[in-house]
Structure formats: C-alpha cells, structure tokens
Image 1: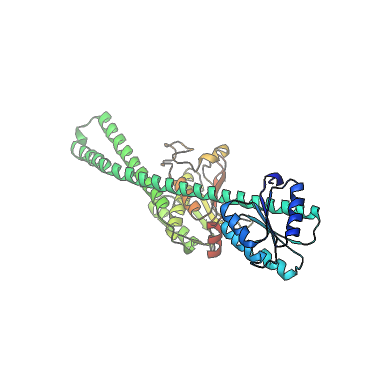
Image 2: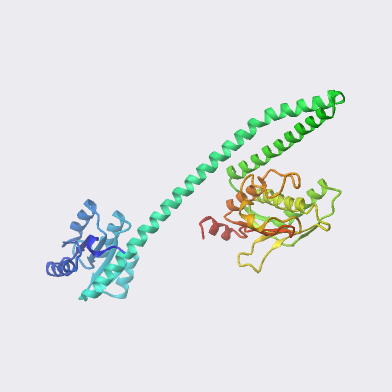
Length: 382
C-alpha cells in the first residue's frame, strides 16, 4: 500500500472555505495536497503533472465532479477518484462509481473515515498498476515466446530441408553399392553397408519428425467440433495394417469429441497411440485403452497401455526433445514424438501429463477444449 506521505492528492471544491478545511486536515495527517476551486484549474494541473488521487466535490458551477473524474481518467487511467458531496443520493453514488470513482464520501465527513477511504482508494490504485504491469510483462513474454517459436520452427524446417538432399545422395549410393556390388563385399563390408542404410533410415525419420514439429509450431489451428473416437479408430486401424502380425486389443470409448484442429489432434493421437502400440510389443496380451476420465474435474482424455512403462522419477523428461527413457535397441524412436504432442495440446490451451511405472504400463492424460466457449476461455487464460 502506498504511504499517504508519498501520494499526491488533488482536491477540488468550489467553496474556498470548505476546500481550505479539507486540505488542512489532509496536510495535518501527512498528505501532500494541492487544492483548487474549479474543474478547469484541476484539468490544467492534471495535464501538467501526475496525481495519485483526485478528491472532487460533486456539484460545481463549471463542471460537475463526475464529468471531471471522467476527464481525469482519460488523462490517467490509474488515477484514484473519490467524489464528495453534501447532496448525495444512491443514484449519484452509482453514477460516480460508473464514472470510475473508487469511493463516495458525504459531507460533512469524519477525518478518520476520510483517511480510511483515501487509503483504500490508493491501495486499489496500486493493485491496478501492479496488475497492468503484470499483464504487460505477460504479453511481452508471450510475444517473445511466439517469436522464438517461429524462429525455431523456421530454423528447424530449413535445416531439415537442407539435410534431405545429402541424405538422398547417401541412400542412392547405398542402394547402388548393395545391388551392384553387394556380392563382391565380404561380411565386414556388408555389415558396414547395413549400418549405413540403417543410420540413413533413422536420419530420414528424424527429419520428418522435426518437420512435423515445425509445422505444429508454425501453422495456426483451424478449430471446430471433431470426432475424437473416429480419429482414434483410424489411427488404430492404420497401425494394425502396418503390423499385420501383431494382435493388440484397442478399447476406444464412444462419443469422444473436442473443439479443436482435427489435423493437429490426429498428429498427436498418432504419436500417443503409436507409442502405446510400440511399447506393448513385448507383453503377452497387449492392450490399449482410450477414453475420458470424467471423475477428474478436468475431465482429461487419456491413452493407457499395459506395456513397458517408464521409471516414475523420470516423468519430467518425457516431453523434452531427444530425451528417451528406453534404449534404441529395445524400442526405436527419435525422441521428438511426445514433444510434438505437447506442442499440439498447448496450442489448444490444454496441458498433458503422464503416469507410469517400469513394466506396469503408462497413461498419458491431456485436456482439449470441448466447446467453442471452452476454447475461448482457454485462449484468454480463463
């Protein structure tokens, strides 16, 4: 709270005797006060200097106190205002508050009450200033983050694109060596060529994943009502088509919908369900469950499996790029998928988290807007 001794107060009252009395009382209590007898004088001072509080009479010949307060707020939106009058009504008080007054004071007033109202008004003004500064810094951080994300997306896309050409040369050379000269190679040569082809394949997958991440960051979401259940079915069907020798039980809850970008959510679910499919490859009866936890007040969607899980104390690393909690030889991957999922969810104003334990499966929870109103609330931080 601002100290009264440092708060500059402008008092306006067209009755000189009343003005003098109010100013003297405030000065006796340590308040730096400037007093004037007209609204025009007050406005001239307000345009020349800064005051923390305007204490104005309501009824004045050249301009009433409410009109003066409105003009003062136009000059300084954070100025505290108190309207005082000896002819006040409830309607007058309402008008004063609608005009921006923080307090309303009837004459004659007691000194203790007046000082209490002044302190309360200054405290409210200070809160407004702090809140405005917080919002400004938040906007600045958001703008900086958006700029950094766009720069990162552009850099990632450029690097990934530039890596494709030499990678195509490597793949072409490896194919020529394998098909034309493979029979001439000894076992060491064949092993070396296989390592080269495997590394090129991994690099190609990494480039594609980086480009997906860049597109998620760079592309604005096109939101609408989407059928999450249908998306999950299509993802599961494609995984089964790609892995015809595996038998995985996939349980998908009916009626799952969201208000989101269908393409981006498909990308996220492709990663989440794909991970569940991959990490259940070593269990006897692999199962995946997809649904919504209505018992949680956030009502998050979830993708759960009974696969390899992960060390519970390592959960913070899951969504960091290139952080992998399993050996490449056990479960291949690039370490970009969950980073992409997190980016998709956050772009919709949601959040994602996980629970799991080694050899006890994993569950990924995530929230998405379910209605247009819900989406607007998330966008505004509500």
